[in-house]
Length: 240
Ligand code: ADE
Image (cartoon, rainbow, N blue to C red; front, side):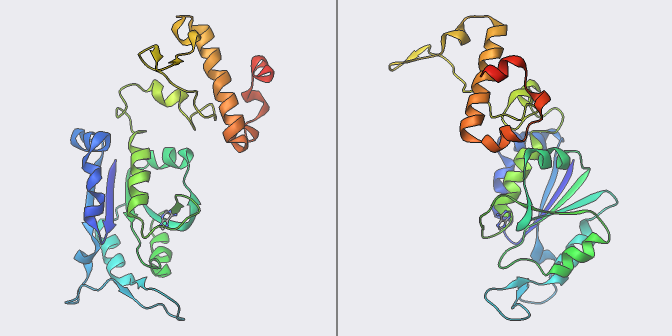
């Protein structure tokens, strides 16, 4: 997958060299470039913002540099992603949809946002997704790009050593929060690992994990449980 990130703070994206995202880049699974929006300014001050038409606080990002950047970077299979608090909520389903794209351009807005005409014009040439991380406001889109790209990269083929880790994790196919996890030692302080996990009985272990996932989801995210269709539950689930 090809990804271009356009920002006025390229240094903000430095963590994309680290950890498993960095490994995916080194392996060529993720072909990622970070660009400074000011590359596409033409005045001596390399201006990217101006005051809003209609008045009001703050500054708005001018359309010209964004237009030049998108002209330079967009191809025939590009989706433009604009992180924004007015976007659609980001979910694991969004991450799966983005992971299936060939080319993403992330446009990181700052200040009060990007002149609306940039998005309107881009939408005549390519699909555009405005995506929100949640109901709060960040200074800009950079942190959102780190979050979105981490969620997307781990879904790319070959990135996770064990693809099974995707099957049972939270927000995975079961639609439940994941059960608690434990490792050695079996006793730690005055706490022990649940006996069933040390029983070697894979059927009982699977049932215990399913029950714990159901209980956890019911307590913490009843909205997720309520959204599941009746056929998502088996007979034993109903007893839980
Ligand atoms: N930029 C500013 N706030 C944001 C949010 N909540 N989600 C994504 N991008 C943003």
